[in-house]
Image (cartoon, rainbow, N blue to C red; front, side):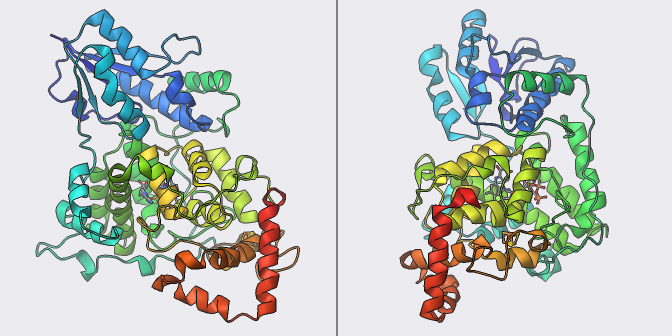
Length: 510
Ligand SMILES: Cc1cc2nc3c(=O)[nH]c(=O)nc-3n(C[C@H](O)[C@H](O)[C@H](O)COP(=O)(O)OP(=O)(O)OC[C@H]3O[C@@H](n4cnc5c(N)ncnc54)[C@H](O)[C@@H]3O)c2cc1C
Ligand code: SF4
């Protein structure tokens, strides 16, 4: 008897475990654009366009390969508003033997799907997602008994396991595991950053753009100038574009920020990796090959591979290890609301304006904008983790709960008490000045901590250090900050704290 095979919007891989061993003639693939998934947060318009268009292209490819595909297009009047409703209707119609799916990337939906068998009256087979280098159980085994989890050690295990950048003798290529110290250059405009890879929207994408404009007009961001890849072939071309034009400088300028360039030397591959258009191992192998063939330096190639088999796998492991409690963590007891300028970009802080404006236009900001600008500000300002997590989940094209949540709640907000990072990435304006050219165009003065025009990051940074003394004073990696703070004259400390208090009470004015 036939099975129903459910494929979700971030599972657009022909090698998906749910499709393994399936019978093309009899089984039926189900894909659906449903209200509940499109509306559980204020998804950026470009994120909705990307996912719907990539789904439609994937369904078309499946049909061309001879699969029977039931595809539900989004319409607000569709009676089936949830995936469960779609699947229930089809189960009643086709009476399949079972529903087969690949485990999804989000606790919310995972807990729902795990209960479906009770309502559907058929077994629901949830298969492991094999598109990661590290299985969930493997990560849990690695984490067992460790007081703190450190990405660097996990990453070395993944290097050994995958063989990426390993010599035949089992040593790391170049004699080091990590070349991060080479990857902290400021970018002064040279060498010029390559234009991002572009795909002009075809008729399928244009139809989806209209749909999103019609039914999601109030969602964040703009649909203008949509140019992301929406098929695996196009995503492969995006990977080749990255290797040819950006990878050689990826390492050097990985931490840089620019007032003029949105994308710098980043790969812009996260949407494709997270939805299955690209396979992470294939991507890493192609990038490693660029080093072996002399097309890119080792600091760039190692740095890039570490982001994928290191950070990406590590945050996923943490997510599944600690959910659902993880999402509720707030160890620094932050209670402030997210300032409205996160949605409008209307702030006099140049670095924040630039990062939010790029986010609204592109549904993308690179890692350092997310971590050291918008994230750093939320940390220093004591924003409630749930509010800032919801913002990151909404505004980025690559945002899926399993990867967004640990990055925001753990890496940025330190709300998990240091499980993911050994110290908070808190920084004053000095860091942003060192890594960017924003400050010279800013209303505020980066060299000042007090006074009306003083850079808000400065007083907020010291206020953060001061108010969290109990949380961090004993952390050896923070000791120097406390020594610097404690040696300031009392009067100066009082003035900075008072400016910090004013800023915290007037966040919306900044
Ligand atoms: C607050 C915050 C929220 C984030 N939310 C997301 C998110 O929702 N989805 C997401 O994919 N990434 C997220 N990241 C990680 C990272 O910022 C993005 O993966 C990266 O900016 C994507 O752009 P890129 O493809 O050009 O990356 P590149 O800089 O070119 O890096 C290459 C790849 O490495 C991976 N990678 C790099 N850093 C990380 C990381 N910290 N965690 C996981 N993977 C990483 C990505 O797959 C990325 O495509 C977040 C980071 C922060 C600080
Ligand atoms: S002065 Fe402060 S607020 Fe302005 S760009 Fe520099 S770091 Fe950002």
